[in-house]
Image (cartoon, rainbow, N blue to C red; front, side):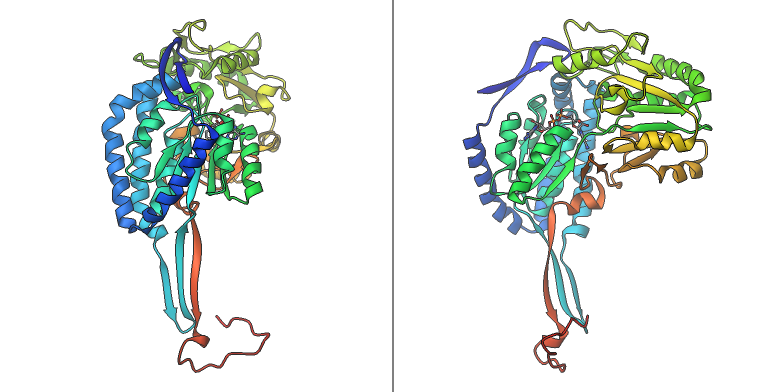
Length: 469
Ligand code: NAD
Protein backbone atom coordinates (compact mmCIF):
# COMPACT_ATOMS: atom_id res chain seq x y z
CA UNK A 1 0.00 0.00 0.00
CA UNK A 2 1.12 3.52 -0.68
CA UNK A 3 0.08 6.84 0.81
CA UNK A 4 -0.51 9.39 -1.92
CA UNK A 5 -0.37 13.02 -0.99
CA UNK A 6 -2.52 15.54 -2.83
CA UNK A 7 -1.75 19.26 -3.07
CA UNK A 8 -4.30 21.03 -0.85
CA UNK A 9 -4.02 24.12 -3.06
CA UNK A 10 -4.88 22.06 -6.21
CA UNK A 11 -6.32 18.80 -5.08
CA UNK A 12 -6.30 17.32 -8.56
CA UNK A 13 -2.48 17.24 -8.31
CA UNK A 14 -0.76 14.30 -6.58
CA UNK A 15 2.49 15.60 -5.11
CA UNK A 16 4.06 12.24 -4.30
CA UNK A 17 3.71 9.03 -2.34
CA UNK A 18 5.36 7.01 0.42
CA UNK A 19 4.91 3.31 1.19
CA UNK A 20 2.63 2.75 4.18
CA UNK A 21 4.12 0.65 6.95
CA UNK A 22 2.00 -2.28 8.17
CA UNK A 23 2.25 -3.20 11.89
CA UNK A 24 4.53 -6.27 11.33
CA UNK A 25 6.96 -4.05 9.43
CA UNK A 26 6.83 -1.50 12.30
CA UNK A 27 7.97 -4.32 14.57
CA UNK A 28 10.87 -5.15 12.26
CA UNK A 29 11.95 -1.50 12.06
CA UNK A 30 11.81 -0.96 15.82
CA UNK A 31 13.91 -4.09 16.37
CA UNK A 32 16.45 -2.87 13.85
CA UNK A 33 16.55 0.55 15.54
CA UNK A 34 17.03 -1.15 18.91
CA UNK A 35 19.98 -3.16 17.60
CA UNK A 36 21.57 -0.08 16.00
CA UNK A 37 21.08 2.03 19.11
CA UNK A 38 23.63 0.13 21.15
CA UNK A 39 26.56 0.87 18.86
CA UNK A 40 25.35 4.45 18.31
CA UNK A 41 25.27 5.07 22.08
CA UNK A 42 28.71 3.51 22.44
CA UNK A 43 30.21 6.09 20.09
CA UNK A 44 31.73 9.17 21.76
CA UNK A 45 29.37 12.16 22.04
CA UNK A 46 31.70 14.20 19.79
CA UNK A 47 31.28 11.56 17.07
CA UNK A 48 27.51 11.64 17.25
CA UNK A 49 27.51 15.41 17.19
CA UNK A 50 29.78 15.43 14.13
CA UNK A 51 27.20 13.24 12.37
CA UNK A 52 24.47 15.75 13.28
CA UNK A 53 26.61 18.62 12.01
CA UNK A 54 26.94 16.87 8.64
CA UNK A 55 23.16 16.30 8.55
CA UNK A 56 22.58 20.01 9.25
CA UNK A 57 24.79 20.94 6.29
CA UNK A 58 23.03 18.44 4.02
CA UNK A 59 19.58 19.76 4.97
CA UNK A 60 20.74 23.33 4.51
CA UNK A 61 22.01 22.48 1.02
CA UNK A 62 18.62 20.95 0.14
CA UNK A 63 16.40 23.81 1.38
CA UNK A 64 15.75 25.32 -2.06
CA UNK A 65 14.68 21.92 -3.38
CA UNK A 66 12.67 20.85 -0.32
CA UNK A 67 10.76 24.08 0.41
CA UNK A 68 8.49 23.85 -2.67
CA UNK A 69 7.83 20.17 -1.93
CA UNK A 70 6.80 21.05 1.62
CA UNK A 71 4.59 23.87 0.29
CA UNK A 72 2.91 21.52 -2.18
CA UNK A 73 2.16 18.77 0.33
CA UNK A 74 1.10 20.98 3.27
CA UNK A 75 -0.41 24.09 1.65
CA UNK A 76 1.96 26.32 3.66
CA UNK A 77 3.37 29.28 1.76
CA UNK A 78 6.80 28.59 0.31
CA UNK A 79 8.56 31.34 2.28
CA UNK A 80 7.20 29.82 5.46
CA UNK A 81 8.48 26.38 4.34
CA UNK A 82 11.94 27.78 3.63
CA UNK A 83 11.86 29.39 7.07
CA UNK A 84 10.82 26.17 8.78
CA UNK A 85 13.59 24.14 7.14
CA UNK A 86 16.15 26.84 8.01
CA UNK A 87 14.92 26.95 11.59
CA UNK A 88 15.22 23.15 11.85
CA UNK A 89 18.86 23.45 10.72
CA UNK A 90 19.45 26.18 13.31
CA UNK A 91 17.93 24.01 16.03
CA UNK A 92 20.08 21.03 15.01
CA UNK A 93 23.19 23.22 15.31
CA UNK A 94 21.96 24.59 18.64
CA UNK A 95 21.72 21.04 19.94
CA UNK A 96 25.25 20.25 18.73
CA UNK A 97 26.50 23.33 20.57
CA UNK A 98 24.65 22.73 23.84
CA UNK A 99 24.61 18.92 24.11
CA UNK A 100 28.08 18.55 25.69
CA UNK A 101 27.04 20.71 28.65
CA UNK A 102 23.95 18.61 29.26
CA UNK A 103 24.82 15.05 28.25
CA UNK A 104 28.33 14.78 29.67
CA UNK A 105 29.01 12.95 32.95
CA UNK A 106 29.19 15.04 36.12
CA UNK A 107 31.74 13.88 38.69
CA UNK A 108 32.30 14.81 42.32
CA UNK A 109 35.05 13.41 44.51
CA UNK A 110 35.26 14.94 47.97
CA UNK A 111 35.04 14.18 51.68
CA UNK A 112 31.45 12.94 51.27
CA UNK A 113 32.43 10.36 48.73
CA UNK A 114 32.67 9.84 45.02
CA UNK A 115 29.65 10.51 42.84
CA UNK A 116 29.26 10.10 39.10
CA UNK A 117 26.05 11.25 37.43
CA UNK A 118 25.55 9.83 33.95
CA UNK A 119 22.99 10.90 31.37
CA UNK A 120 21.93 7.69 29.70
CA UNK A 121 19.77 7.44 26.58
CA UNK A 122 16.46 5.59 26.82
CA UNK A 123 16.98 3.32 23.78
CA UNK A 124 14.44 3.61 20.96
CA UNK A 125 12.45 6.87 20.93
CA UNK A 126 9.15 6.98 19.03
CA UNK A 127 8.44 10.43 17.55
CA UNK A 128 4.83 10.85 16.43
CA UNK A 129 4.31 14.18 14.68
CA UNK A 130 1.56 16.27 13.06
CA UNK A 131 1.44 17.72 9.57
CA UNK A 132 1.38 21.45 10.34
CA UNK A 133 5.10 21.96 10.97
CA UNK A 134 6.38 18.52 10.01
CA UNK A 135 10.08 19.37 9.84
CA UNK A 136 10.70 21.45 12.96
CA UNK A 137 8.34 19.37 15.12
CA UNK A 138 10.20 16.21 14.12
CA UNK A 139 13.60 17.89 14.53
CA UNK A 140 12.77 18.96 18.10
CA UNK A 141 12.70 15.24 18.88
CA UNK A 142 15.24 13.81 16.44
CA UNK A 143 18.13 16.16 17.24
CA UNK A 144 18.27 15.82 21.04
CA UNK A 145 17.29 12.14 20.96
CA UNK A 146 20.11 11.20 18.56
CA UNK A 147 22.65 13.47 20.25
CA UNK A 148 21.92 11.73 23.55
CA UNK A 149 22.54 8.29 22.01
CA UNK A 150 18.99 7.11 21.32
CA UNK A 151 17.71 5.60 18.09
CA UNK A 152 14.61 7.28 16.66
CA UNK A 153 11.61 5.98 14.75
CA UNK A 154 9.51 8.82 13.37
CA UNK A 155 5.84 8.45 12.45
CA UNK A 156 4.97 11.56 10.46
CA UNK A 157 1.40 12.56 9.67
CA UNK A 158 0.08 10.95 6.47
CA UNK A 159 -0.96 14.50 5.51
CA UNK A 160 2.67 15.64 5.14
CA UNK A 161 5.02 12.63 4.89
CA UNK A 162 7.11 13.55 1.85
CA UNK A 163 9.57 16.24 2.93
CA UNK A 164 10.28 14.80 6.36
CA UNK A 165 11.02 11.45 4.67
CA UNK A 166 13.66 13.20 2.56
CA UNK A 167 15.10 14.98 5.62
CA UNK A 168 15.38 11.73 7.59
CA UNK A 169 17.32 10.17 4.70
CA UNK A 170 20.00 12.87 5.14
CA UNK A 171 21.06 11.50 8.57
CA UNK A 172 23.80 8.85 8.74
CA UNK A 173 22.42 7.73 12.11
CA UNK A 174 19.93 5.22 13.59
CA UNK A 175 16.76 6.95 12.46
CA UNK A 176 13.87 5.45 10.52
CA UNK A 177 10.42 6.52 9.33
CA UNK A 178 7.23 4.50 9.47
CA UNK A 179 4.23 5.79 7.53
CA UNK A 180 0.50 5.59 8.11
CA UNK A 181 -2.24 6.91 10.34
CA UNK A 182 -3.39 6.14 13.86
CA UNK A 183 -2.97 2.37 13.44
CA UNK A 184 0.70 2.67 12.47
CA UNK A 185 1.21 5.19 15.27
CA UNK A 186 -0.35 2.80 17.76
CA UNK A 187 1.84 -0.12 16.59
CA UNK A 188 4.89 2.08 17.16
CA UNK A 189 3.91 3.68 20.48
CA UNK A 190 2.79 0.35 21.95
CA UNK A 191 5.92 -1.54 20.88
CA UNK A 192 7.72 -3.29 23.72
CA UNK A 193 11.14 -1.96 22.65
CA UNK A 194 10.08 1.69 22.49
CA UNK A 195 11.44 3.30 25.65
CA UNK A 196 10.24 6.87 25.23
CA UNK A 197 7.42 8.47 23.26
CA UNK A 198 7.52 12.05 22.02
CA UNK A 199 4.14 13.09 20.65
CA UNK A 200 2.92 16.31 19.07
CA UNK A 201 -0.65 16.50 17.92
CA UNK A 202 -4.23 17.05 18.96
CA UNK A 203 -5.80 16.31 22.30
CA UNK A 204 -7.73 13.26 21.04
CA UNK A 205 -4.71 11.59 19.45
CA UNK A 206 -2.69 12.55 22.54
CA UNK A 207 -5.15 10.85 24.84
CA UNK A 208 -4.94 7.60 22.83
CA UNK A 209 -1.13 7.72 22.66
CA UNK A 210 -0.74 8.50 26.37
CA UNK A 211 -3.04 5.59 27.26
CA UNK A 212 -1.08 3.16 25.10
CA UNK A 213 2.25 4.35 26.47
CA UNK A 214 0.88 4.29 30.01
CA UNK A 215 -0.13 0.68 29.60
CA UNK A 216 3.52 -0.17 28.88
CA UNK A 217 4.84 2.30 31.49
CA UNK A 218 6.66 4.09 28.69
CA UNK A 219 7.49 7.71 29.58
CA UNK A 220 6.16 10.40 27.29
CA UNK A 221 6.57 14.01 26.32
CA UNK A 222 3.25 15.36 25.03
CA UNK A 223 2.82 18.57 23.03
CA UNK A 224 -0.91 18.97 22.46
CA UNK A 225 -3.48 21.47 21.25
CA UNK A 226 -4.02 25.03 22.41
CA UNK A 227 -6.69 27.69 22.45
CA UNK A 228 -4.42 30.67 23.09
CA UNK A 229 -5.92 33.95 24.28
CA UNK A 230 -4.35 37.27 23.23
CA UNK A 231 -5.27 39.98 25.73
CA UNK A 232 -4.76 43.60 24.69
CA UNK A 233 -4.60 45.78 27.81
CA UNK A 234 -6.19 49.25 27.74
CA UNK A 235 -2.85 50.93 26.89
CA UNK A 236 -1.98 48.51 24.04
CA UNK A 237 -0.86 50.12 20.80
CA UNK A 238 -2.98 49.44 17.71
CA UNK A 239 -0.25 50.81 15.44
CA UNK A 240 0.49 49.15 12.11
CA UNK A 241 3.42 47.03 13.33
CA UNK A 242 1.51 45.61 16.28
CA UNK A 243 -1.61 44.91 14.25
CA UNK A 244 0.34 43.32 11.37
CA UNK A 245 2.03 41.05 13.90
CA UNK A 246 -1.26 40.14 15.57
CA UNK A 247 -2.96 39.32 12.27
CA UNK A 248 -0.18 36.95 11.21
CA UNK A 249 -0.11 35.46 14.74
CA UNK A 250 -3.60 34.16 13.97
CA UNK A 251 -3.44 33.46 10.23
CA UNK A 252 0.05 32.05 9.57
CA UNK A 253 -0.41 28.52 8.17
CA UNK A 254 -4.12 29.36 7.73
CA UNK A 255 -4.62 29.45 11.50
CA UNK A 256 -3.44 25.85 11.81
CA UNK A 257 -0.70 26.40 14.39
CA UNK A 258 -0.83 25.09 17.97
CA UNK A 259 0.25 28.46 19.39
CA UNK A 260 -1.74 30.72 17.06
CA UNK A 261 -3.59 33.62 18.70
CA UNK A 262 -6.98 31.89 18.70
CA UNK A 263 -9.11 34.25 20.83
CA UNK A 264 -8.63 38.02 20.94
CA UNK A 265 -9.72 40.12 23.91
CA UNK A 266 -9.77 43.94 23.79
CA UNK A 267 -11.22 46.51 26.21
CA UNK A 268 -14.94 46.93 25.47
CA UNK A 269 -14.43 50.69 24.97
CA UNK A 270 -11.84 50.07 22.21
CA UNK A 271 -13.60 47.26 20.30
CA UNK A 272 -14.66 49.42 17.32
CA UNK A 273 -11.23 51.07 17.04
CA UNK A 274 -9.61 47.62 17.21
CA UNK A 275 -11.81 46.08 14.50
CA UNK A 276 -10.89 48.92 12.11
CA UNK A 277 -7.17 48.69 12.84
CA UNK A 278 -7.21 44.89 12.52
CA UNK A 279 -9.06 44.94 9.20
CA UNK A 280 -6.59 47.48 7.81
CA UNK A 281 -3.66 45.33 8.95
CA UNK A 282 -5.16 42.30 7.24
CA UNK A 283 -5.44 44.39 4.07
CA UNK A 284 -1.67 45.02 4.29
CA UNK A 285 -0.34 41.58 5.26
CA UNK A 286 -2.89 38.90 4.42
CA UNK A 287 -3.18 37.57 0.88
CA UNK A 288 -4.74 34.14 0.41
CA UNK A 289 -3.72 32.21 -2.68
CA UNK A 290 -1.39 29.62 -4.16
CA UNK A 291 1.39 28.86 -1.62
CA UNK A 292 4.00 28.98 -4.40
CA UNK A 293 2.93 32.40 -5.74
CA UNK A 294 4.88 35.54 -4.88
CA UNK A 295 3.20 37.83 -2.33
CA UNK A 296 0.85 35.15 -0.97
CA UNK A 297 0.92 34.95 2.85
CA UNK A 298 -1.81 32.36 3.45
CA UNK A 299 -2.53 29.13 1.59
CA UNK A 300 -5.37 26.64 1.85
CA UNK A 301 -6.30 24.52 4.86
CA UNK A 302 -5.04 20.96 4.89
CA UNK A 303 -8.04 18.89 3.79
CA UNK A 304 -11.66 18.82 2.67
CA UNK A 305 -12.72 18.05 6.26
CA UNK A 306 -10.72 21.04 7.55
CA UNK A 307 -12.29 23.27 4.88
CA UNK A 308 -15.82 22.16 5.85
CA UNK A 309 -15.10 22.63 9.57
CA UNK A 310 -13.65 26.11 9.00
CA UNK A 311 -16.56 27.30 6.85
CA UNK A 312 -19.03 26.03 9.49
CA UNK A 313 -17.33 28.25 12.08
CA UNK A 314 -17.87 31.46 10.11
CA UNK A 315 -21.25 33.04 10.95
CA UNK A 316 -23.09 35.47 8.68
CA UNK A 317 -21.82 38.97 9.50
CA UNK A 318 -18.21 37.88 10.02
CA UNK A 319 -15.66 40.36 8.61
CA UNK A 320 -13.78 38.93 5.59
CA UNK A 321 -10.08 39.74 5.77
CA UNK A 322 -7.28 40.55 3.37
CA UNK A 323 -7.05 39.79 -0.36
CA UNK A 324 -8.49 36.54 -1.60
CA UNK A 325 -6.92 35.27 -4.85
CA UNK A 326 -8.06 31.67 -4.60
CA UNK A 327 -10.70 29.28 -5.84
CA UNK A 328 -12.28 27.22 -2.99
CA UNK A 329 -13.66 24.73 -5.52
CA UNK A 330 -10.23 23.58 -6.78
CA UNK A 331 -8.24 23.88 -3.55
CA UNK A 332 -9.13 23.78 0.15
CA UNK A 333 -9.21 27.56 0.48
CA UNK A 334 -11.16 29.44 3.13
CA UNK A 335 -11.68 33.19 3.14
CA UNK A 336 -10.13 34.36 6.44
CA UNK A 337 -12.54 36.06 8.82
CA UNK A 338 -12.82 38.02 12.05
CA UNK A 339 -15.91 37.37 14.16
CA UNK A 340 -16.73 40.39 16.32
CA UNK A 341 -18.31 39.82 19.74
CA UNK A 342 -19.59 36.25 19.29
CA UNK A 343 -21.40 34.42 22.08
CA UNK A 344 -18.61 33.68 24.63
CA UNK A 345 -19.86 30.09 24.80
CA UNK A 346 -19.68 29.54 21.02
CA UNK A 347 -17.38 26.67 19.98
CA UNK A 348 -15.26 29.22 18.07
CA UNK A 349 -14.32 30.70 21.47
CA UNK A 350 -14.31 27.68 23.76
CA UNK A 351 -12.50 25.17 21.49
CA UNK A 352 -9.38 25.14 19.38
CA UNK A 353 -10.61 26.15 15.90
CA UNK A 354 -7.37 25.36 14.00
CA UNK A 355 -8.73 27.39 11.08
CA UNK A 356 -8.46 30.90 9.58
CA UNK A 357 -11.30 32.38 11.59
CA UNK A 358 -10.77 34.35 14.78
CA UNK A 359 -13.14 35.76 17.41
CA UNK A 360 -12.62 39.11 19.16
CA UNK A 361 -14.45 39.86 22.38
CA UNK A 362 -14.72 43.10 24.35
CA UNK A 363 -13.98 42.84 28.10
CA UNK A 364 -15.09 45.11 30.95
CA UNK A 365 -12.04 44.87 33.26
CA UNK A 366 -8.78 42.96 33.77
CA UNK A 367 -10.12 40.59 36.40
CA UNK A 368 -12.92 39.45 34.10
CA UNK A 369 -10.69 38.99 31.08
CA UNK A 370 -8.29 36.85 33.08
CA UNK A 371 -11.14 34.56 34.08
CA UNK A 372 -12.17 34.30 30.43
CA UNK A 373 -8.61 33.76 29.22
CA UNK A 374 -7.98 30.97 31.73
CA UNK A 375 -11.30 29.20 31.14
CA UNK A 376 -11.17 25.77 29.57
CA UNK A 377 -8.95 22.74 29.64
CA UNK A 378 -6.14 23.97 27.41
CA UNK A 379 -3.12 26.00 28.48
CA UNK A 380 -0.52 26.10 25.73
CA UNK A 381 0.23 29.76 24.97
CA UNK A 382 -1.15 33.22 25.72
CA UNK A 383 -0.15 36.78 25.05
CA UNK A 384 -0.51 40.17 26.66
CA UNK A 385 -0.12 43.44 24.77
CA UNK A 386 0.68 46.71 26.55
CA UNK A 387 2.75 49.88 26.15
CA UNK A 388 4.17 49.17 29.62
CA UNK A 389 6.39 46.07 29.71
CA UNK A 390 6.38 45.91 33.50
CA UNK A 391 2.59 45.91 33.55
CA UNK A 392 2.53 43.22 30.85
CA UNK A 393 4.89 40.96 32.83
CA UNK A 394 2.81 41.40 35.99
CA UNK A 395 -0.36 40.48 34.11
CA UNK A 396 1.38 37.58 32.33
CA UNK A 397 2.08 35.81 35.63
CA UNK A 398 -1.66 35.16 36.06
CA UNK A 399 -2.11 33.22 32.82
CA UNK A 400 -2.57 29.45 32.99
CA UNK A 401 -0.28 28.89 30.01
CA UNK A 402 3.05 27.20 29.34
CA UNK A 403 4.34 30.08 27.23
CA UNK A 404 3.26 33.71 27.45
CA UNK A 405 4.30 36.17 24.76
CA UNK A 406 4.54 39.92 25.37
CA UNK A 407 3.52 42.26 22.52
CA UNK A 408 3.66 39.42 20.03
CA UNK A 409 2.30 35.88 19.67
CA UNK A 410 3.14 32.67 17.83
CA UNK A 411 6.44 32.02 15.98
CA UNK A 412 7.82 35.57 16.21
CA UNK A 413 7.82 35.23 20.00
CA UNK A 414 9.71 31.93 20.20
CA UNK A 415 13.36 31.48 21.14
CA UNK A 416 15.68 28.50 20.96
CA UNK A 417 16.62 29.22 24.59
CA UNK A 418 13.02 29.30 25.88
CA UNK A 419 11.42 25.98 26.91
CA UNK A 420 8.09 25.41 25.15
CA UNK A 421 5.13 23.25 26.19
CA UNK A 422 1.70 23.34 27.74
CA UNK A 423 0.00 23.22 31.10
CA UNK A 424 -3.38 21.64 31.91
CA UNK A 425 -4.53 19.41 29.00
CA UNK A 426 -2.12 21.01 26.52
CA UNK A 427 0.50 18.50 27.52
CA UNK A 428 3.58 17.91 29.60
CA UNK A 429 7.32 17.93 29.11
CA UNK A 430 9.13 20.65 27.19
CA UNK A 431 10.80 21.16 23.82
CA UNK A 432 13.58 23.66 22.99
CA UNK A 433 16.21 24.91 25.41
CA UNK A 434 17.98 22.92 28.12
CA UNK A 435 14.78 21.14 29.13
CA UNK A 436 14.21 19.95 25.58
CA UNK A 437 17.57 18.15 25.78
CA UNK A 438 16.98 16.55 29.18
CA UNK A 439 13.77 14.86 27.94
CA UNK A 440 15.93 12.31 26.08
CA UNK A 441 18.19 11.11 28.89
CA UNK A 442 17.77 9.48 32.26
CA UNK A 443 20.11 10.40 35.07
CA UNK A 444 21.89 7.34 36.46
CA UNK A 445 24.25 7.49 39.40
CA UNK A 446 27.37 5.65 40.59
CA UNK A 447 28.10 6.49 44.22
CA UNK A 448 30.75 5.43 46.74
CA UNK A 449 30.00 7.05 50.17
CA UNK A 450 33.19 8.20 51.89
CA UNK A 451 32.43 6.06 54.96
CA UNK A 452 32.75 2.82 53.00
CA UNK A 453 35.61 3.60 50.71
CA UNK A 454 38.65 1.36 51.17
CA UNK A 455 40.79 2.69 54.01
CA UNK A 456 38.09 5.03 55.36
CA UNK A 457 38.54 5.91 59.03
CA UNK A 458 34.83 6.04 59.85
CA UNK A 459 33.19 2.78 60.85
CA UNK A 460 29.79 1.83 59.35
CA UNK A 461 26.91 2.90 61.57
CA UNK A 462 24.13 0.67 62.91
CA UNK A 463 21.04 -0.67 61.12
CA UNK A 464 19.03 2.58 61.43
CA UNK A 465 21.72 4.83 59.97
CA UNK A 466 20.93 7.57 57.43
CA UNK A 467 23.39 9.05 54.97
CA UNK A 468 25.76 11.66 56.34
CA UNK A 469 26.18 13.54 53.05
P1 NAD B 1 -3.32 14.55 15.19
O1 NAD B 1 -3.39 14.33 16.66
O2 NAD B 1 -4.49 14.17 14.36
O3 NAD B 1 -2.09 13.73 14.59
C1 NAD B 1 -0.78 13.86 15.10
C2 NAD B 1 -0.03 12.58 14.84
O4 NAD B 1 -0.55 11.55 15.67
C3 NAD B 1 -0.16 12.06 13.41
O5 NAD B 1 1.05 11.48 13.04
C4 NAD B 1 -1.26 11.02 13.53
O6 NAD B 1 -1.24 10.06 12.50
C5 NAD B 1 -0.95 10.42 14.89
N1 NAD B 1 -2.09 9.82 15.58
C6 NAD B 1 -3.34 10.31 15.65
N2 NAD B 1 -4.10 9.49 16.42
C7 NAD B 1 -3.29 8.49 16.86
C8 NAD B 1 -3.50 7.34 17.67
N3 NAD B 1 -4.70 7.05 18.18
N4 NAD B 1 -2.45 6.53 17.92
C9 NAD B 1 -1.23 6.82 17.40
N5 NAD B 1 -0.98 7.88 16.60
C10 NAD B 1 -2.00 8.72 16.34
O7 NAD B 1 -2.91 16.07 14.96
P2 NAD B 1 -2.82 16.90 13.60
O8 NAD B 1 -4.20 17.16 13.08
O9 NAD B 1 -1.82 16.31 12.69
O10 NAD B 1 -2.21 18.26 14.20
C11 NAD B 1 -3.01 19.24 14.73
C12 NAD B 1 -3.01 19.26 16.24
O11 NAD B 1 -1.69 19.23 16.75
C13 NAD B 1 -3.63 20.53 16.78
O12 NAD B 1 -4.47 20.23 17.86
C14 NAD B 1 -2.43 21.35 17.22
O13 NAD B 1 -2.72 22.33 18.21
C15 NAD B 1 -1.51 20.28 17.71
N6 NAD B 1 -0.12 20.74 17.71
C16 NAD B 1 0.51 20.94 18.91
C17 NAD B 1 1.81 21.44 18.93
C18 NAD B 1 2.55 21.70 20.23
O14 NAD B 1 3.76 21.93 20.19
N7 NAD B 1 1.89 21.68 21.38
C19 NAD B 1 2.46 21.71 17.72
C20 NAD B 1 1.78 21.49 16.53
C21 NAD B 1 0.49 21.00 16.53
